[in-house]
Length: 349
Image (cartoon, rainbow, N blue to C red; front, side, top):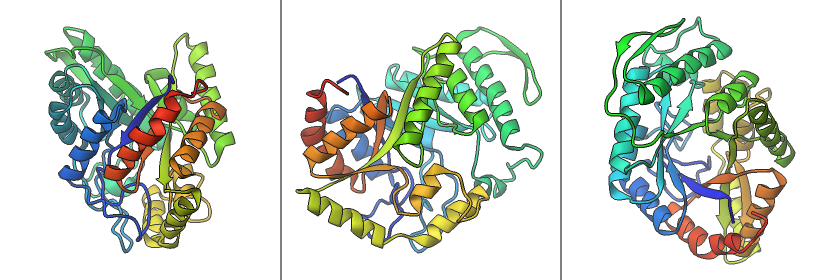
């Protein structure tokens, strides 16, 4: 097995299943800490948290409670020894000089295991509430800003002094010491034309998705082709929700229970935050969320899940998966003890 496996921590309440019928994920420190420790103990490669500033409402108040990503990952970094720790920052919200120092600090706490997930900023409602949404910046302009931001961060990680005068940022004789122990991993998930180009050019790992496996495969191959033209390599990862049970039938019953509990109000709140309509959105995550699951989902007994995961990796030309569970404590243990050994024995993934 050469694929990488990690976990998207439940940093925001409700996790990645938009349902009234899932186990309680409160977005609190204890659940996130325990999930990270179990992920490391069970042999996963990384843990990642998103940055979230406002939830979507609904009867579950989905994502209404969340911890700040970098601060939380610093706590996790101090408690772990091997697993990579990836935090999220928003380019339209965090000054690049401050961001460079924050992730350097995370890298030192972790002993060189830090990563930065770069987000240009998509949920308008989150940033309007703090007067951080600039009406003059359309979608592509936010990525133009993010490209300047990322270039400054990279230079501060390697150069003694940095001068930069761009359209969005100006820094003069700027210093940032110490440097990271190693250049932190850079991760991005932009899937629009401009976002995709940015992700492949600037990141080491490109999170991709699609409404189905055909779209996901096409995105993965497109990313690798663009990277080759840029004389670089890129890893492509996708998100994957794992719904398991003692049998395939039991797992499907659990999945159906989650679907039956779909929080439509939260999905509508998600769409509103994106500025999209329920019928017209082209966002794959939101489209999937209409069925309660926000990502590609595998359902079955552990052996069935292993087969489906192996097939997903191979068919979509993926280098890794970021896993999601409705119950992280039990789910990560099932993954590590029953599913991962089967994947390690499978030469195709």
